[in-house]
Structure formats: C-alpha cells, structure tokens
Image 1: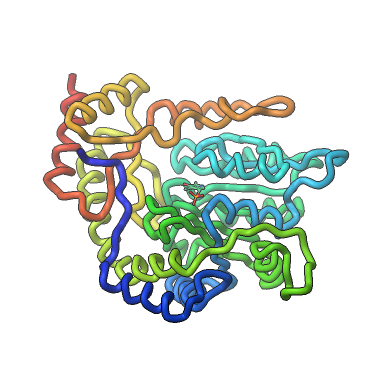
Image 2: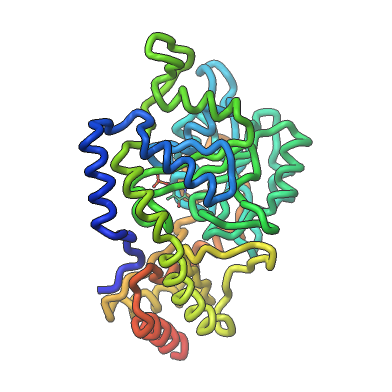
Length: 368
Ligand SMILES: *Cc1c(COP(=O)(O)O)cnc(C)c1O
C-alpha cells in the first residue's frame, strides 16, 4: 500500500541522545532548552525573527488572532469578520469560528489557487478585522497587494503558512509578510515535531503578548496579565523537530525528485498550479487538476485498485460546508477547482518506480 503521505522519521540514535538529555535534566516542558534551541535554529533556517513555538498549527492560528486583537469580543458586540479562502484545510476557517470570528469566503485566483486580492477588497465591511490568506500547497499569495489592502483599511493580516515551510519570495523568507504567519509542524507536514506549530510575528510586542498567552497569561509565576490558554510545545516535540531539521536537506531532495517526475509527466496533460518564477518550491504537495470530477473519481478508483492512496485536497469547498451568518459570496472558481483536484503521494522514501506506476495508472485512465 502506498500512502498519500508518510511522516518523516529521522535518525533514531540522534533522537535517543536528545531524549537522554531530557531525562538527565528532568525538564519536560515550559520553554525548556530544546524548545529554545529549536526556536533559534528555525529562525536561522527560515531567515525570520520573532518566532514562537506552540502545540500545533491550529493553536498557532488561534493565538495569532488573539494576540493581534482579531478574536471576537463580548456577545453583545457585533461579530467580527475575517476574509479568507474557501480552498484550504478546514482548520483555517474553524479556528476563526472558534475565536468568535465569522469567516467571509471570497474567491481564489484560477491559476495560483490563492486568494484573489481584488475579491478581498470588495468584501471589506465595517465588521472586517482581518484577512487570513493561505499560501496553498506552498504557493505564495500576492503578498504585496494584500499587505497594501490591509494597510489602507487598517486590517490585520494573518497568513496561514502551514504549507509554506522554507518558501522564499523574491529571495527572502515568504513568512515575513503580514502581521503574523503561522506554521503547522504536524507529523504529515514537510517539517514536523509530531504535533507542533509556530507563529512568526512582525512585531516583537505581539510575540511577547502571545508568549504570555500560550502559558495561561502569566508574565511571571505570580503575575497574571492576560487571559491565556495552554498552547506550549514540549521538550519531546522539540527533540523530534531538531532531528527532522537536521535532515531537512535529504528530505527535500527526495521529495523534489518525486515532484519533478510528476511535473514532467503531467505538465502537458493536466493543469498544474501556476507558480511565479520568483518563489521557491518546497515540494510539500503535488496537486493535480483534471478536466472533471468524474476524471478525479476514476483516477482515484484506478489508483485504489493498485493499493495507491490519493486524496481530494481540498474538497469539499468550505463555502459549501461551513455555517454562515448572512449572505454568502459566490466562489465559482474555488468550487470548480475543489471538485476536480487531487493530491498525489509525495514523501521521502517513495521510490521512483512507484512514482512511475502512479503516473501510468492515472494516464491509462485519462486515455479511456
Ligand atoms: C495542517 C494545516 C493546519 C492545521 O495544523 P495542525 O498542526 O494540524 O493543527 C492549518 N491550516 C492548513 C492549511 C493546514 O494544512
């Protein structure tokens, strides 16, 4: 059986050494030395500042909304709104709901599959507090246009960068854009710490507020200055993260080989995501857009018959499944793409002859 994704397992002896250290210190969580080391190493690797490690990528989003004042206030207050994409993983939108913010879905661009800035601008109302774009499949949103709209309308921008680990934009980290960018370090992501996540803030003051928030709002053991929650990363998660980071180059190389094989096979027969030349690719996903939903279903059935897993990412379109207050915007492009897209298996350890089998299975189905 070929899974659609497989968690990266780093060298076991190295992980054991880190765990021995945890046993010697007896320091298991609460901003321990491994969490501090991983914070420094990630800032250096990604080329960013003000990075805060948290328990998972969904909490990263929630803490970012809180720290930036986007989360809903009292029940008598008009609910706040955030403009976001319906073409993403459910966590982008459900985290908003969880924080008392109404997700307002607007349509994506038909080529990049990221939010179309022109649609953002027309959806802004007096209740809008934030824009929550997603760098979907590691492709970059139009960050300059979005940052400009946010500035003009005094809105916060929180990028969901769960797919964009290590991606650069015009030679610099993509993750520096917006008031905050969040990352997910879930086991199935390119870089992982079993469960985990991070927030990269533009301003140090927001980082400091968020740092208190993830530890019950404490400024010191006897000083409670904010309403907080527990969203801390543990030393065991950080140990895994450090080991995975050590091997990230090998991981990327193996994924790239798979990715380029798929690209060569499908670039003239299927529609691939359009990527600007000034962004880098992290080979996280290989999404494939076919002619119709029937084609997707057929391809998936053919793959399944050969014990190959694929996934309809992202389906269904969130505009169709999330409860809404008020009127919905039409999102025909997102719905259309959701209906006829799938992601192919990609992970380090997927053999090239298996990739070839996947390609041939899909192509054989398309010819019929
Ligand atoms: C994985 C993912 C999340 C959630 O991250 P977790 O670490 O699983 O909580 C959020 N948004 C997107 C786009 C994701 O792919």
